[in-house]
Length: 321
Image (cartoon, rainbow, N blue to C red; front, side, top):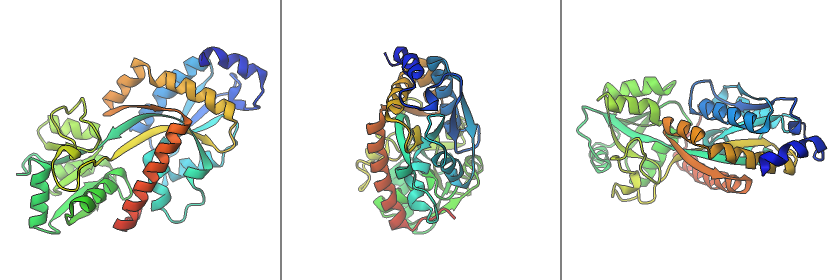
């Protein structure tokens, strides 16, 4: 119904949103470099949305400052429906607590349109490590306080803060080692230079299947289809980890002031795209699962995630430096 109604609504010009015009492209800003899951999801959404709306939809990568550069660009854009943001837990829910000098607040300056995916992390150790379970890891770390390090793709990332949350809930003394990217971090874990890492799924999965890493837990609420025999942290039986969940969530946001009618129509169309087998097959390749919801659902999720990560940042003293 939304797809059928969109052209008539667009021609009427009732909302005044330029995004309603089929002769001008909608731009989805991805605040990270090309190639990662953010980019893949945005391009798949752009493809489906463009076909559904019969309107050009393009992806524009604007990396920098942990995602803040591209996010601010969307915040400062005209609320005409032509500029959207590929939202990510880091930029929307974590960065406002992590960065002290931001001149904007993504939670207040952007309007949630729709959410479509959630991606857990995987806890990996070197294949040569004697650690085979989360209980083994916690026991070993407590036996040698300060001797265990965990890698991440950089300060302030989901892997970094998931490690901080894990340490807070289990009482282990582990040190964070930030790297400039996921691949060099995983390389050092596989080589035994670092004892553990909470990694995004695809690059870690390749090393697990190659016998370089051992996956001992995933951070989502449910096991992953790609790692069906790997328990969740909540299933580990370790005190403090019952109910543990740390996922990266993805959606689309628009500048505050974008007309409500356009937001509602766009949300309906995006959820149609996100429900297709083609879109969901891309999620599976990236180690993600569907998480579909409209503006109110996405706003509630952002509020919950923001509160959770702000507390982790406060207790840990984590910074983005």
